[in-house]
Length: 208
Length: 208
DNA sequence: CCTACCGATCGGTAGG
DNA sequence: CCTACCGATCGGTAGG
Image (cartoon, rainbow over all chains, first blue to last red):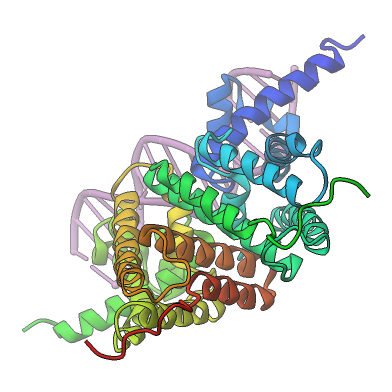
């Protein structure tokens, strides 16, 4: 019999990664050091390394948890809504809420990681890219449905809609984190609403 | 008589800071280390420290040069245009050009520095904040003129216009740096153009 | 501007 | 999981 149950190992891992996400959101994923995180958790460096094998694996696991948290707060609550404009509106609502009361002290983790690693090569850059590509694809899919159903006043390229919504979110995060002025959230919300302005030509389909 | 002329000292300082900006744009302003920069310049650590006094002063000087470069590329070319919408259009043109062919390998320096230091206290955070506040004020001033002259189709709050243009630029930078796909620049340009769409109600004043 | 050096911390390993 | 330790690098100083 193992000295600690599988469930306990898993719980410990989660506690560790939560602390890692919190710390890395402030000092960056590269600034995150094994020694400092071990200190914060009241354990030894070697104990921490033992759990993840290397700093890079710790960074990748930290990023993966942050992605999962984003998904849970921004995407999950919206999947009950009908695909297309209604779902995009729900996503944006969750998104602004996430930006205003982030799970992390240092603001949107994915934005920070993207800026930090966009000019470096390696597994972390690649993982960030994969996560953001996936998210862009989600937005684009919903935008395509909204456009083809005639739900949007501005029925342009779905990729443009996805791009602009993401840009507004990233810009809102930067502004709000730097100035801590809640007006940034209002402005972000208004700008998103403008992109998603409903078509006046016809109502969203209610059936079929 | 000094061993090196004042002009020579100044030129050396500029060479040093250009290298610092280049390096920091990739590895971050905090990741910039005295030893690594000294290596790159073929000089000793203590020689480099001697020029700036401390790492923090080096960081502040590096940031100041990056701000000056931004101003020269994005703002300066637009000041010949008439205030209001025309000047905003010129600024956005320069801005997209700057994002597409950045002076720095790692993309917009101010965006990187803002994300890196938004959750930390200290002189660097404050300097980033001052620079971005100044830039926001420039945008807002031009937007206020454009709105009050009836030049914009969407004549809302000038602060909203400034916020959204900045958000689009920040989002475009992140997207382009991560994916290196020039379509991000086209999308950014289109999104800015949409914010600055000219009023159909009346033409921009040509005199008075 | 240099060499030589300071104590602290880095990621990681040996050995238990 | 721990202590003890590795070589490398950190920011910075002493002394010239």
